[in-house]
Length: 192
Image (cartoon, rainbow, N blue to C red; front, side):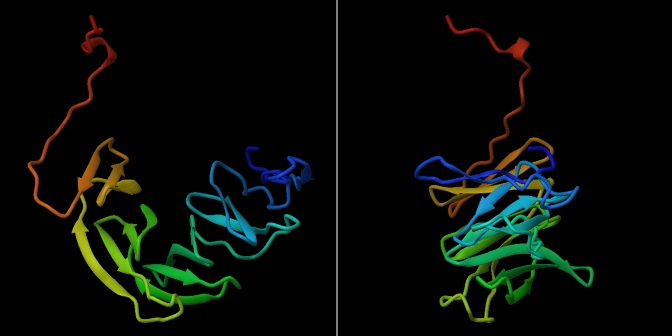
């Protein structure tokens, strides 16, 4: 929908529910849409999003960066007084805790950790067991090579995709580093 917000349909019947074309204003809309039980989040600018009421599509004032939605919590990277932070919000969209960490590249949840990629490192933030505690801390940190745009986890490995076109894999054991170069379509021979 370009800068418009998405239309809503009933998941079971496919029936149209609402489409508030310009509910978010001129800057809202884009490729990022995520939802939890009460809100959906749509792109604004850069990595910003705006929350809308899922029931009726109403605009809210809550505007976290691309959120990680998990078990009733909203986790998002942000900046507070020129310092990068990662925050946890409750169902009421009120902040529960924040920790100094740079998630400006990407932020994901993997198990009991949030993984944040920033300008200089990737860090793992241990999540409080009950979700409400403010006693959260950095578990580990990896120095970065490149401008990480996306993080993924699979098979106990962490993958970092960079703007420069590299994919970096981090795991528990030491391995021999392999570098693969991109080949042009002309340099790849056709199969026999």
